[in-house]
Amino acid sequence: MHERGITSQIEEDKPRDNCAVVGVFSRTEDVSQIALEGLIELNHRGQEGAGIVVSNDRRFRGIKDSGLAETVFGVKHKGPPRLKDSFIAIGQDRYSTSGSLEEMQPFVEDGIALSHNGNFTNVRQLKEEHNLPDEIDGARSDSRIGLAVINKMPGTPEERIKRGILRLEGASSLVISTLEALYGSRGPQGFRPLTIGRLKNQAGYVIVSETAALRLMGAEFFRDVEPGETIRIDDSGVTTITLDKRKISQCIFELGYIGRIDSKIFGIPVAEFRRRQGEILARHLPEWAKYVAPVPNSGRGAELGVIASEIARASGIIPTEVFYPNPYRGVVRGPRTFILPDERIKAATEKYSVIESNVEGNDLIIVEDSIVRGSMSRQVQILRSHGARRIGGMVAFPPIRHACGYGVDFGTNELLASKEEFQSYGKPDVEKIRQYLGLDYLYYISNNELLEAALGNPVEIEDFGDSDFCGACFTGKYPTPIDGVIKKS
Ligand code: SF4
Image 1 (cartoon, rainbow, N blue to C red):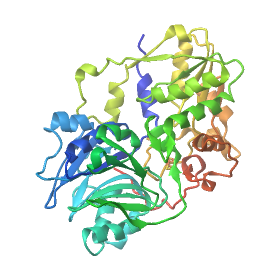
Image 2: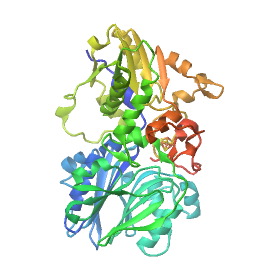
Image 3: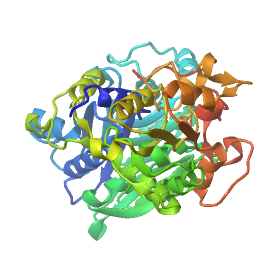
């Protein structure tokens, strides 16, 4: 039996990242094709557009368009951009709430091509300081302004990059190309990940948002770009050209929600982090719990499955599934042409069915990553209508109460855990949220427990500021000022 609307509620109610970036430097390999492989592997970070710019030592050539990377370069265009003797390629997968082609990356201006993952937080001030217009070449995003700021600096392209990067605050993992060299840069707080890979047979190097992309790019892990570090890649290898050391605040959502389960993010295997989340949640099960099931959502079901399995292993309760995702629905349409997020949500509404025999008469624990707006109430209603006896919710992240200023879009201004009616003494009242969601039990992982999942051992700290991680969306304590943020799209 199909339950229309389950997926729309689920997918709409999730944090979303802005994008993935890739870069390739090789004198012998097809850099454009390798960049494309990277973008396909990183499409979980952004599905609304993809672009690649290649360069030889004379000029740039690029293609960017709306859709998944395979759609852009396999259906809409005849492959990735080609340029004789090209030896550098950079690319981006983009998530956005608007389909404007002008906002898609990489951007190219004055001998520099740039792809950005994150959100610059001092753009308003920089626009005023450099007298920049609101719109440049049809784009209004922080990333486009960031490139304009770099190009306001004096000197050669590399000198401009070195100076400009030091002016840009906030979350930035950048892949940049000049006509001579490839650059990778991670903002000083290290909010977003960035990794260097080495192509097999010493054929060159790649830069990627996540390690999961390396294998199909024909590369192996070399090292992460350090927070505050800018590297140059050319024929002589990898060189650090700037290092801006400050307090590190890596986005903890990268580890558990944004990053792919086969990635290592900030040096931590995502799969291990997920298992530890499950182990921690297992400590807090109600005694009536009999079955534990992940709640499917936008391709993350396997990751929640890891948490659910670990809860089951650590507690002895039985792992199960309560929703069946139909893998064949949507397949005949082939690769999607460009669709806006809302349309994508609508297109997926019939993808899940309830597995009634696993639900009827059972005492269930359902596992979720986050409760943004409260779609779990809809899932609970559906499970109850199929005869579930008791339903508990276990949430693998603490209550999200504040918007992110660093590039993660929670898709709504109405964060459930920040609403007045769910507060007691200035904090989210979990009992009130439980009642609203219609659950028999609700547990959110705590801030300290989330850090324990990241670090592998128990911690007792006041807030995320005492660690190398950002948790501002839980605490409201932003590690850097965010008053200069402009919306990504
Ligand atoms: Fe990540 Fe939350 Fe910090 Fe944003 S506010 S960078 S989502 S931890």
